[in-house]
Length: 257
Image (cartoon, rainbow, N blue to C red; front, side, top):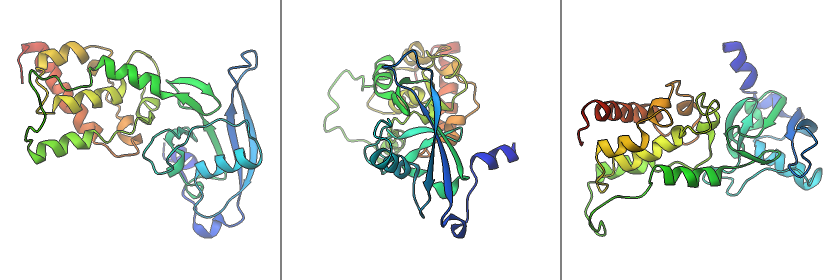
């Protein structure tokens, strides 16, 4: 395993970066040409110091291949749109630097999501549907406007609200890549965000009806690749463990929190 990881993610010393020639392979697919199978296209790029994968892609599209498809908006690890598979690992192109990789780099689109073309996938439609499945809004019998909240409780809510919807957790998830109906860590994280929100009045039993099944909490295999690949370092492990305990309790006893 150590040898495999070093081949995928191998930091390069700064003095090795100068004049290094990168061999980039990018998966190409045009949905307007369904009869043409996806293929890997090779590019050669001269490396600069502190250049990101996103910089490489933008330079290729601007100067060499205007047909290349990929997504990017903020370049600051906020929008999540530049997520892709980089040497077999899901990550953000804007925060992955070529100096961290070997000279041979392979780029693929994220699995699990609908492929638009090349490295571009449709995460927006999936996340929208997931929000509806988890009923991602505060359920309250009264108004929550101007209602005082404990700082520590709201800090915990904010910590889970930092998800940028990049889809890296889903791309690295074993269950998600076997079942397209699994809600993924992103969905469970969203449920946990409202579960711990003191303004939301849903009981554990009500939450069990939403995520207490094989497409929700009990579909999680606990490999925790989501915890490893989350670019925002959201505490997936502790959150999923908490949610699993609550759902087991609700399934057995059916009690409110």
